[in-house]
Length: 225
Ligand SMILES: O=C1O[C@H](COP(=O)(O)O)[C@@H](O)[C@H](O)[C@H]1O
Image (cartoon, rainbow, N blue to C red):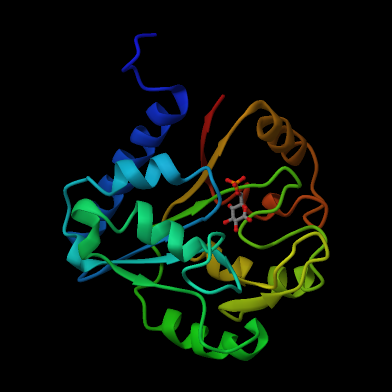
């Protein structure tokens, strides 16, 4: 591989960016606005960078998150900050971003306001892009979240979650709301996550590996080593 050649993860990120951009373009031919739901964490960074430079009517695109830590928007672990720094740049800076946090001190106090914001958007979303952790969580549907059963079953748009394995309180789109999309993508990398996904595919206990709630969406899997 030459010094300038893309890594497999960068190559995958470009393929995903092209597919998502094409999906948005298609939906924008028949509707005034289109909604893109993205995940946070480290995996999406090269995808955001590639998507930000795609040619499309970004001024008619709304972008929100699958989940968020209840932290200030400028905190280093804020998913909103990640989106602002890596996706809302280049051509994509014309998109409208809808964050999942408010000025309230807890997500329980903020859920109603966030739900109100999200209800204004164009559902079904054009694309929901999920990530996955090594524990099989997706969005903030963690195996040890106290509110996991609620988040899997409720028809509410968002749920405040407290998770013993995680340092911060979080807010997550509910499983039902995450299902409300025309296309679903799982974007992951590394052998460890491939192994977790294999386990998820060979069982059915959603509480053990919450990603199982989305395996039959259908789900397009974008994986690189
Ligand atoms: O906590 C989170 O983790 C997952 C996976 O993140 P990654 O760093 O392993 O890519 C992510 O999908 C989710 O949005 C985020 O809040």
